[in-house]
Image (cartoon, rainbow, N blue to C red; front, side, top):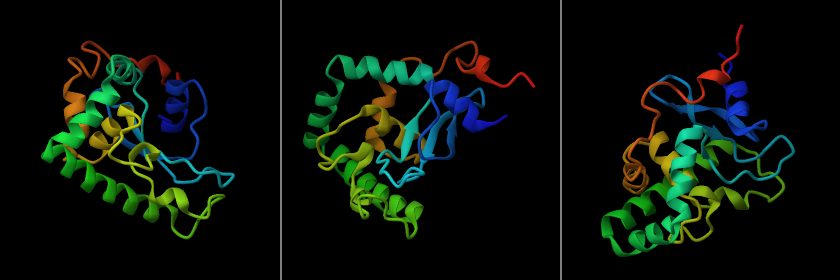
Length: 170
């Protein structure tokens, strides 16, 4: 099984700055990838953990479509446990990005290495719930990401993997 090929099929395009798969669905296919801080051309890719499972991507999109980003941003400001979780995860995000980059500084001279989850410059204002769920799946213990995921009644398809048909036939 070629993870990169499956992720490309899940996304409908080649993944940019693909590093590796860090979380899989219960059926064994990619659910979250770890992206490098810079693509092959040195352009910043600010989302370290990228949600690829089509079923879960659609479920999180439904939460976002009904004001989820604003609601979770508010909760992250008002709830001390969520605020602490976000702060710790943001620090971890920055550390991981610096580790993944090594000496590379890309076209932005390293500025994006200090962005928060999902490339946020203001971590308390969430940008993308997909990135927070991906972070929670990649780094268990991230309370905010895990609580957003808990809103999804069925995070994984109940009968079979939605990406099963994307496997290579050989």
